[in-house]
Figure (cartoon, rainbow, N blue to C red):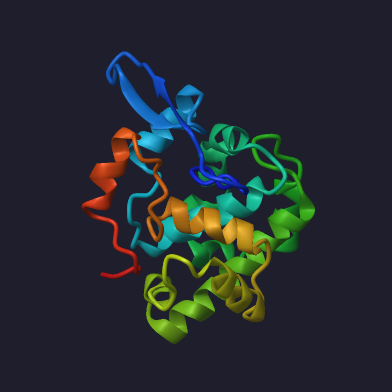
Amino acid sequence: MPLRSKARHGRPTFRRRESQSLTDRSRCDWAKSGLEVRYHDREWGVPVRGDRRLFEMLTLEGAQAGLSWETILQKRDRYREVFAKFDPTAVARFTPARVERLLLDPGIVRNRAKVTGTVANAKRFLAVQREFGTFAAYLRGFDADGAEALSRDLKRRGFTFVGPTIMHAFMQAVGMRDDHQPGCWRALQSRRVVPRRFTK
């Protein structure tokens, strides 16, 4: 996803948004649609330590490159269906024929490099698990400002669609960073639980 809470240049803004259940709450400015508001309120910046969920977010952040996060949220359920509920062991076994079928599915981003990259990343993900025990344990070696270092190391390990901007967004999404805008209703809440370093 794009950098949501911090713009590329300067600080972000936030806006007041209303819903039936969360009236008069202020949110980070990027959360505009209903899907984005729900994702922001329930998931964004919440620490993730389960490897399957980490693989999901790694996949979705890579799929988002060049597209809107709204588009990815709309396709998320279909991604879960066709990518074996983001089980990296299952995805790593996808055959070339299965990849070709995926490229015909309008419910996902039909970009060959992204689809084949997801299968390749699943294999690399399993290699990291073998080395560190879990992918979450591997991530604990990077602090909140480590997007560039994480990007470099993942590329060295053969991952694709893991550039610094994508890794910054990934770290925001899985709670390695807390970039909720001051004034956002989630800011104080998340800062009670999200550490600067990704820890158990």
